[in-house]
Length: 198
Length: 402
Image 1 (tube, rainbow over the protein chains, first blue to last red):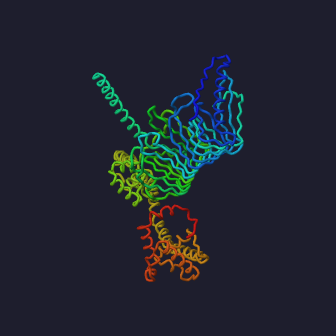
Image 2: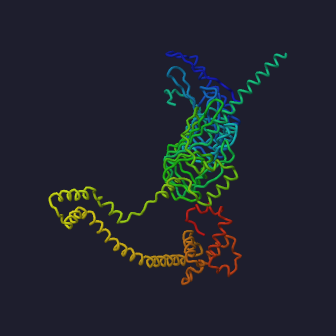
Image 3: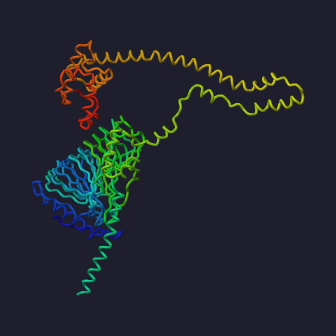
């Protein structure tokens, strides 16, 4: 199971809180290090969770996958212990120009972005992505949206499709898990940014 | 020890009592939130087929619904909302497309809906109904392909559901019936092609049929009503005359009374005179019409035979159906439709063989084949055995070949 790290971003107004900055920065680095150590040199990794860092964004140009299921759930977010989300399950998928990033407020209006980007197509098997918002141009085949008689509210509404294609996507993610991921051409960057709009 | 046991029991009792109303409340709210609301500003597509079916919801295994079927549909301004009851309050799933949504082989089962632009009849296809302001309480939606441009799928706290439409009267009545009776009623609705919406409009029309406006009626309207004064006035004048003249001239009085009425009677007389002329004209046109119609039918038949003669083993669906239609109209066997065109007769024989094979009727002997009612029998056979199988095929555009 993945390491859970809690980020505290309480900052005194007007002062650069170095302690908080280094704590936040270190937290991000620990998560990245954990991810990189999982992946090893070959670029292939197994059973990768990404959680406990609060919400982060996943962006990509194109995704093609098989065996898609969506259902609602309650899960942890950066602000609440229990917030509404949607679970997206995809059996096999390939993503072009994948970017994962998380923005940290280090002090006052100073922000940094820790970003993982892959220059080559990323292949994933057994993906679970818990997200509160998905923005994309979407294509589905054998699409079905249906409700089911169940006492469990999470099973009362489901969206399913045999294939899924997403273009120009931006996904506000809270939890990510892959049974297997092949990520070649990976690059990790830390950059200073202006206050993010989202 | 005994006190502790009593305390534990009391706690359990309180918990049980608290749990029961919660469950009841959840069930009640679940009932309210069954289905998901799909709305669209506009829906464009080809043929739409409304059917009555029994479908599953989150609270019932079987509920009467209208199934909307499109081969191709484009939804503009589509929004889907699903409100769910959780232990932490309501949660809403919102799926909204800023761009157009293209769906292929779309099927949506709705227990309630509101729409503008078409009146629905059970089992009767409507070519491109052009629906507007559509809101449906859907329980199942399927499509072989779905393209959603600029989609935003979000899951948020609170009840952000759209206004739920009302169930049409037909579905309300069906829902009040026991399951078996409801199923039988659904069959009746489907077989009888009964109206699902616009019932009131139809009733209103039946109750107050608009009479055809005749030229005479129009004329009557145009004529000003004879005023009471114009009749009374002569009376008054008569009184005055009595005073002035001891023996009033009767003819003079009648003329005096008639004069103000002339402007009323004259247009009416004129219109009445026109009526026999109009009838004569209509009679003449009616006499010519059957001859014209006969000519037209003959032309259509010749055209069809000509087209059939040009075929080479493969018959386009539209032409094939037109040929069958023509043969049925003439009460002739298909092969006897074009007796003067040899190549057309050969092609029609091929078409008949193929149809008989498809309907598993190729065992028919020569006498049965020569039967003038063969086409009717084939149609009956299709209705009895293959109507359900054939229904999806009927939705296909007529661009294929037999």
